[in-house]
Length: 250
Image (tube, rainbow, N blue to C red):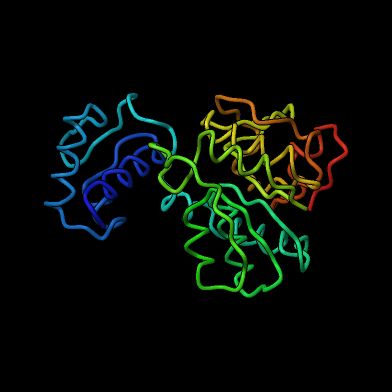
């Protein structure tokens, strides 16, 4: 792992922990030496992103709340895998599907590697790489690489790709779904690309593990009433019982 990648992973771990993390914990999580972690923490402190203290560090409020892709794939991995397996039943031979930049969409792509008569259109670089050795037809959205979310293509070129293609289904995820059924995320650029996906897909499927229920992020994506299907590992979640809407829950 390169220094810059490790620094991003450290920031993700600090954010997830929401407080102090020791050097020993970082060494174990990142399979790195103590000297390497200490150098990384020093570099991050110089950038104003962390505050070092004896034996570890705490985050400052100056860095983005977007967690790196590698770290996101490890969060709630069993729930995401269960969601992905459910979602495969909605993918038929000959379909054109949109997959967004989310780690849950990546898990779905992993379930589709063996498919042949399928077209995937995505702005997720990790999904493109995953499917590169499969028989799945893959269309890249193009666009600019996000500064914050380095697996993700954003901008006008990415938006236009999804505006020019009509899909059978869009599979997407977000950062949060609050108790009122508001679906929110932390990146306006990613929201813009998803909006193009949602507009041009016949079926809209939200992939959402229950850790995202009952909270709200910064920017509105849509409402639960705007989707057709919500797939989660916890179909009995209180939020789903209390939210009005015609969407189906799997």
